[in-house]
Image (cartoon, rainbow, N blue to C red):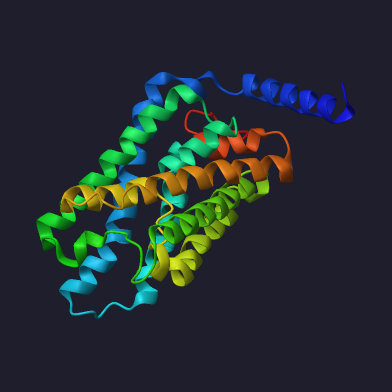
Length: 269
């Protein structure tokens, strides 16, 4: 066995020991409904803003700038990480849930529940937009830009999602990065991706964000781009994280699963 493999085994053992020392409430299945509600509510807010930007622009005669439409989802994700990250990890995206599971920071048995909650939240947001504004702005659907081929849009979504997953996993690998720095980094990346790549593919990076408007407007012709692209990009991002950081960490587990149920020690007196 090589020294690298020995160090990886020692790191995995230390991680398991730390997890066992946590409050048993952290793994209490009775808390799962709170996490699922957080994922549904957070994804609702994300899709509401991400898809709603184009809807509002269409209804207001284009008063919303393209830059504002691109930046708004990043700011919303930043806010959601702040107020929901400790509850569920604030995945808000099946590709992110998949990445955390493949990275071994998130248990596979909880993946289906998270994905269902995210889909429900996203579809509810699209229903809300449709009830208020009809199908204005194609309900904020993400589609390849004018003159952009499906293959080009797919390649863009793969690369963008790989970068997003690297940003999420990278800022979740050390305790000092969880929370403030992670929210700023992830929100900033989403805004940046939207600013420069929005005209190419829509910069979705999230299957639910694209599927929900497509479902409600009854057009699934290009939805495959925004499912395959983010999933492939997530797997690439995880592979790069293994190359860059090695084995998963306890800090990554807390970022992926939230800290709900972990009892903090009381102050003396």
